[in-house]
Image 1: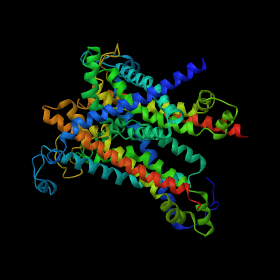
Image 2: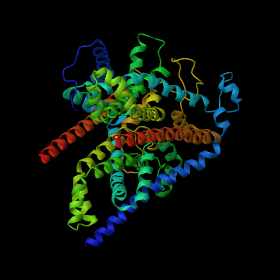
Image 3: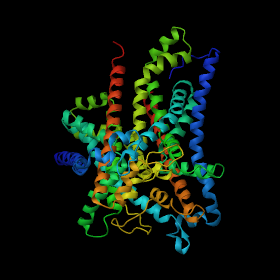
Image 4: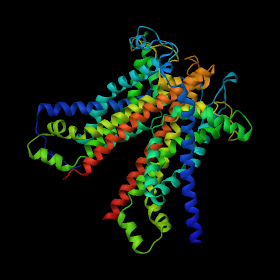
Length: 299
Length: 293
């Protein structure tokens, strides 16, 4: 932004409000950092009796003295990656449909539906999932309870697709019109437009959407908690019931506060915090590099 | 070859659209057909007379009223707490922060926006354990939940305030400066009024986020049956938690019906807030587009 008030005139009200705004910002920053600090502080007793590697690699069997969260990491990875595997092509297809192929009115309608979908509470996805999707999955595969990786991933895909589609659409429409017109003038087809102009041009946007959706899927608690079944065993098939890191935090709450079992939820919290922090940082790097490269191009 | 590819692309894209709309449509139809029959005064007030229930003369024991009031209280308290910080930080980032500090602060707030809500709930819970050692009366309660929710919506408020201010045309700032206004005056009397609609739509989205979140409150004090809370230090009921609880713990058909009814009420609340935010946003965009007439 352009700086208009280069040299600030001293006035008490100016100084006051500036100070207050800065204070609000600093409070926000301190709170963000203290989330992590608190978890480390409360989880620390755990690491003194239980080594970090054991915690990250062992199975979960409190009655045998095993307090590893490895099965939950696997559960989280399984649900998140399957949901992305379903949601990514689905979202890309929808974005292409809305941006390029559908008639204008239908495109506008679809866009509106997608926007509406972002407002649906996750607990409602979970609720409808239990009474609608889970019985279906149980019938289709006639195995298990229907509360499994597949059910949770399908619902999660429905949850994260709108976010991805909206980010994709935004990056599609950010492609300079001149590029598209140049291609049209050369007699390019719609397919060439998509493959050689839109998709390469929207590369950063597509990765952004993917990372945002990944963060959303990783952080979701309700769908996994309600639909994935919460079994503590290591999953072996898509129809197995699993517990995610987020669901583990929600489930162990009832246990005794001083037990090792209870303290593992702080380990899960720390893993989730760091994981999403890495995602945020990679998004930051991605956009920094993108801004730099587009700046270089325009020179 | 080209035509085969074009054809496949068509089929793929249309199929994706069909799957998404079909899945979402089926989902909504299922919820509506199951939930609509449950809607009615009985769902909210149970058997209690409406006047008595609203005036708190009688406790509503088998209706959704305590959960609805709990959710409304949560939203109100969370927003009142988060708003000063959200606005303050948003204004600071948009108007005062230098390039470097702005980049640092926005990174931290991006981080906060990415933190899963269950982790925020865990933070609220750990804070309660920590404070409980000093103030033994403090247990998970309405106040703790509201504070944790405030932290959850804080990054949304900051971002929307910052964006609303940064979107304003530079001419506005130049004009104000040319008239001799200093920066504080300009923010107070020129920029904030102009950005009000944008900020407001951000606030509504934050309300929606606070209304629907379940993970934060389930760690910080929500219970299935508490009635309307008498103070900030009581436990309370809330709609999303009620829905979660009914999904697994319903004991008869009527309770399941109530669960569907509650889901429908929460969905309508969120849809309403969402539409409101969208309408305001549309108005702002129109004004910014046609600013120079």
